[in-house]
Image 1 (cartoon, rainbow, N blue to C red):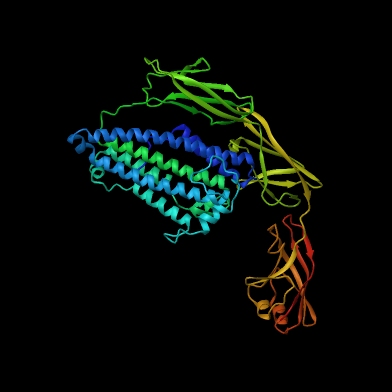
Image 2: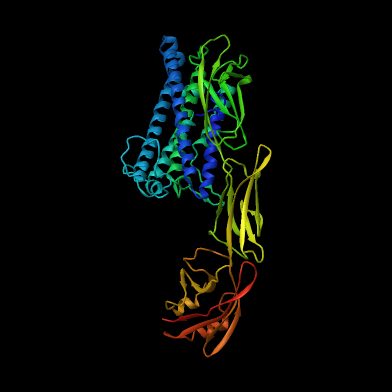
Length: 534
């Protein structure tokens, strides 16, 4: 039961959602104190929106109740719709309170404390273990499901309730094509808003909804996401209340409060030298009677506050709004943050750049779209593949300097740079793989494992290696049965298997002259692999 027409998503709510997406994307990078602080600010911003929505909902509920209680005609006209509104409030409150308790359980684990409400600041917001432990590993004692599974079940139940039209008054109203169209819009919106379907991550993998929220996520991000769902619940509750009141045929809806709203055109976080542009408007006012807006004693035509942001830091401005024919001052306060140019650069593989290899980098600039970012390098070539930047050092380069620029208000500015040392790829070792086992010569191997159809050689850094590179075995030799045998590829030839079949316990199989191809195409030789039979 959520809607687009009666209670559309405001630019502020869109800004909050956009900030969350940007901050979540930066989890792939090194999570700095500034990023964690950003999650905390985002949570507080959504908590502020929740309070504002609650206030509007309470006022509307009182208006609805007054219309219902006015007389018998009111009970007949509003009764069925008022019952839906009350049930919706109970469902919303129960789900909201469950998420709040969910957050408290995690914050008490993270902070090692016993809070009875969410603290203003989270000291250990970078903790990625305890949110995962509570949500994914621990179980709800009442249901036996993990806490994340229980959250998903409650989300599914709330979504089903919000999108099910089983009330008689709603079914009767479906004959009204406009009502039916608006209802279908609400169903579509809430199916999306409270979806618990699988998610596609940055690597293109499909992962469960619970994993996308809690696995390897810092506590600060988890709290921001859960608070977002609470904000969505309150917006849904307010929206369906508006819809129920309107659908009852109300024609005497009265606005009993006027509020000044600040709507930033480009968010509350901007780069130094960029423009901060905000629109100050009145809530629920006739658009043909625009208000007069004053900031620091100066009137701003059409309620647009536009300035050049040259000073880094957080800035606050205050003003008031006058409605036509009304001398009441409706005061407001706005805030925005100006950040110095910066870039976050993360080497996906390691902190070292290797020659002859496509070093993969995630590169982004806070608040900037990818098409506004330009990456260049000295001592290397730069290209893009699957959303990553590929850095390949040029021959003879000892260091590589990566520079990141971005377009801010039509001007390209340097956001930051990093310098890396260039090293050759470490030489891999030879291993024999058979079934689920990997043999490096330190442990004896059975004849059955040697003769297995999936037995083959592999060049790698081993099961504990920090790099997983595409080395290819070109050819190798063995010494068995008193003679040398050679084959191409990474598997034993038929002659080799015949000779191996004659080996007995405590015999030794020597694998020699193992040729392998590096990612650059160069062919090298690996040390011999000696396997003892058991």
